[in-house]
Image (tube, rainbow, N blue to C red; front, side, top):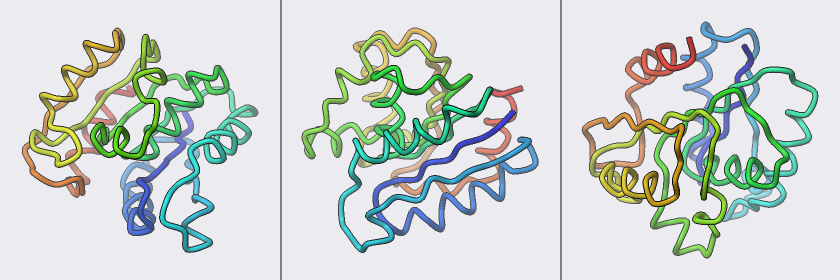
Length: 174
């Protein structure tokens, strides 16, 4: 199985997603990190459309892959799946940023409505961008029928529980 990784919006997520890749690499045949254009150019905001197209273009030649995405990377994935440009075997979403996405005007209700891909959401119970309770309600409201939620204790959007995340991913994927 192949793994495609997408980090959050801020450039500080580059180091985080690289650490996650190192942690998860033994579980997969290949891994690929999508590095965002705005990280390279010093911009502040991810271009969801550009990155969704880039993701779809990369993934089109891969037969079976799992997506691991954090925060803004989740939005990129959801948009590409909604546009029928991406067909992952499974998705692992870490830190769905509901309030941030809405504040930036992203159409997350449309992108996630009826999301059918087999997915797992890892969410801190007090994540400042969406508590695990908010995410649970969102999953139900958007009818994300094949999505399960794992709640971790925490009040940040950082997700530094690398070994715990590795075990959760291994149990979910295999």
